[in-house]
Length: 164
Image (cartoon, rainbow, N blue to C red; front, top):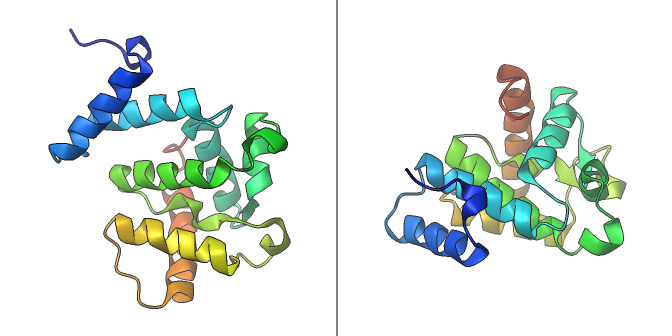
């Protein structure tokens, strides 16, 4: 019987994730479990489960959520995690994509853009880079962001029990 993800060392988890990628087995349930466990360990208080719940709650209300709100939901000190939030959301996008979900970070924006859902140029470029790395074809970056935001809103209402 295989070990539970919590029983693997950090190095074993990284090796298993790399092996799944190398073998094209990123659709395997163990891969998703390993991604989540890896994130829980290195997220400095950020976890997929908590971030998924926060994003899903905001999306169900058709509203955007700020980067700091993600840290606050996790009880993580912003000063300790603000540099990790972007990478955390990148890894969450891969996790969500492998689940067949939209790119959930589409509704996570800078504090000053929570009312509009806009992303600053650097954040938009990062979001599009992640999307392209996952196989999305993006020609109009702003239109892609807005479409993906609508997909996240729909996801939250169509599958209310999916994320938490």
